Image (tube, rainbow, N blue to C red; front, side, top):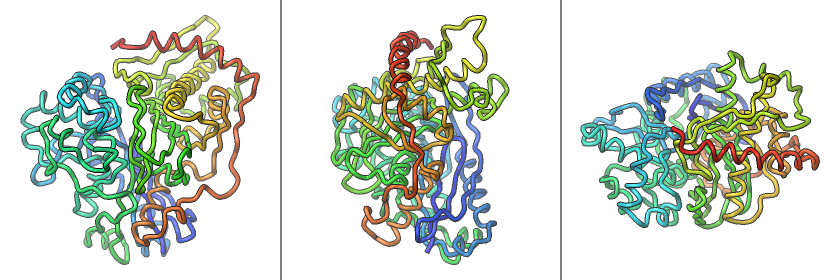
Length: 486
């Protein structure tokens, strides 16, 4: 038996094929583009997700592996919070408003005023990145589109609709809408009413490890499957990463250094700490929840800087020779899309400070990496204020391929970090695990173990930790100066 995991990200769609021994047989990627038609806006065309997914599946098929044709189940992982508005024919009414869109700050305050129990129900501060404020913005600024909206889906749920014809969502992704009663794991009628919506406009809810539709027969034949695969509920991208890493037990932690940045901790109950801008969401498996600090521009910051100087990330990092002997004299604040934890401020801006004639590209590149690491330190402190200390973490995400960046992070955070060889496929691999659980009903602990094999460990250096402790205090002032600048 074999299973496929599909991760619908912001910059690409990734698909992996996994066998019954959880070995990665093949992987494929198809790129996506992002559109920013106005300041604070961030959108994508849902049709691009479909095209990229079919391209990625086609590339897996073209590897000509019998395991692809025999695939029994598919799991979906997806970028969270996006608002896909559908008409009564299930056609998108406008481009999807993405997770890193900051246009709905005013609507966040109005939403919390309309439902004073919002934070207790959802476990979260209303932030522009979440889905509900986006609908409040559409209601105000695009009333005709709001009037015609019959369904609101998250990105991966729209992909499921295309692939299966079903409108189904699971708990981890639904947690990021602000319409879910996260403790009860059910839609909240009160939160829906606060945005003038109701349950009829929401997808059905399942757990991430439960069945959630089967591929349309004609599409299954077109793609070359022997029989239409069963779909799992799947997971939001970070919850899928947790499943891939086996972070299913209380206090399991990992750090995701992707387009955005996340520091995750699994919990055995709903433990909201909204006052610190810490997210409290459902996990993708039953009877588990999690807390997260979220940073909107992590690896995206390095990608942005590479574009500014007309380079790529590898060429930028090469002159640094894989190590940083001391903090860069230059400072960078990574608030290119505003920030969530701990500031909850979409108006924050990124910046370089402490520049001099001798400042060169290498110093600025190192400053970008350190600025992201300092933002993670802010998030770690917020998480620790919401629970026990974090003393180690696994790492995943495209940015985690950089030894230099992980060394900087270990020194800034003061904890050891571990990277496994297959970490870059974490979310898609987690989705494949959920596909297997949906097909077989096996116990979660039997399938969702920690990664096998040796990990590369990055330990903090006491001298560097001390230097970064001092530098962090200086950086915090730059961060404060970045607030509310737009």
